[in-house]
Image: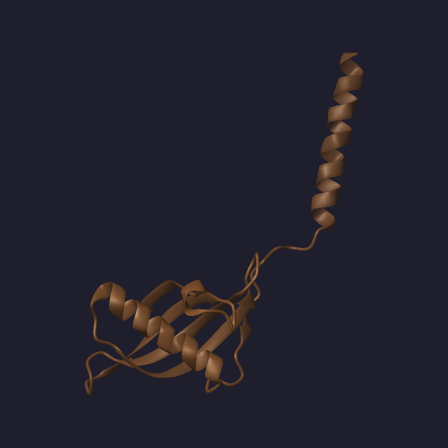
Length: 120
């Protein structure tokens, strides 16, 4: 009885290893944004600056999206990783920031989320 249980456990482990090796890797695959002047991309950039300003009581002014990447998010929607150019004070010096925003294009504003925002 003990031998058959050991064989059953060993067979189950081999099955799990074989199945795990045949499954595709679940890695995030960001793809570059070709046109950073696209209306949706600009709106995502403006959204990130607005939300950051409101939550941190800053006075950043959105200037442009310098570069970015997108990926399909697990569970739906899209992750946007953008490099934003913003004025640190209205009419003042400019700085670059990296943000990550999750959202569903065409959905309402309350479904979008700013996941990170930092100076680079």
